[in-house]
Length: 437
Image (cartoon, rainbow, N blue to C red; front, side, top):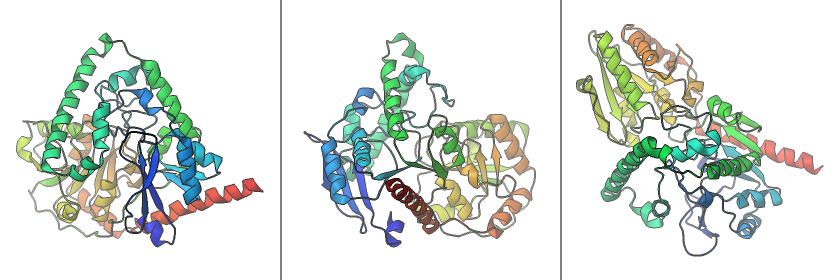
């Protein structure tokens, strides 16, 4: 939005905010670097990655006149949705009534999957939700309505980075995982209103079908969405403003020194974190080649005794520490199990000249030329371990990948990305003119 503004476009932000007693209202909030911000008061719940416990709460048709009034007031040419979380269907209805064009970016799979990542209780990709029956089990440990209301409160937003709230979040996460474990064991013993989840998916698919154009941030995301929707769209990788060309050739590794591998991201099963640890444990059993794993991310990791002396957990990091992090690693591993729509950490690594070892389930694979700037693997223990073994036993491989990255054209820029998105807006508006003729 800031880059679009620099390109002389007027941009407004609307977000689902807090709850009060009463109907839906839209209030002007503080502006951010010239971008005027508006808050939806009493939006639909925003479950984040916590799941949905009461599907009926997410299908409420509240107060269309407020959305209509707001859109008539600001007169947008295009509404660009980056999520449907917290958004009433009434907003899309009002946009269509006023002939306002709509565009959606596929950051995740919310609307298709209440848990967002299309991973079932067994940790596998969910391609058949069994008319809502699997959703019941997956969402059995979802956040309560009260928890979601607290997360969306203004007080929480002010305090979310405090030590106290971080401790509470960690405790809540442990309780949530325990509930999910219990759900996996006992779900079949409970009567389940699975048809509400079927209705919920139908509700959101109707919203998605009514959007004029899709910005898919990877070919992988496009392939998943097109399994459920017949929609028009274009694949455009996403970006952020802090990515700059900071590539450099790495010094040759001293003979006998270990290769430094890195994992950067949340400590979660669906991110493939434990797949990576299991693969490294297997690797250690078949080779004595030297390596070290640096872990940067939130959460607490279960111990893997077989490799614990070769693993260093650094915890969370600040963005301004990335240069030091990438200077001290040889390879970034992105071992996603879920069908991840993209992965900005991959572009960040490439911008520092660091090669990637990427799961075929990660959208960032679009930017990986296998054997040129990285390697793509199937997300299973044997294939990940086999590719790691190939790297460990070939001293020149990583140096060659690093050299290829440094010598290739650097095409990642926020300005270029914003211009591509604006081209899609112009395309939508030209269609509107043609329709009017």
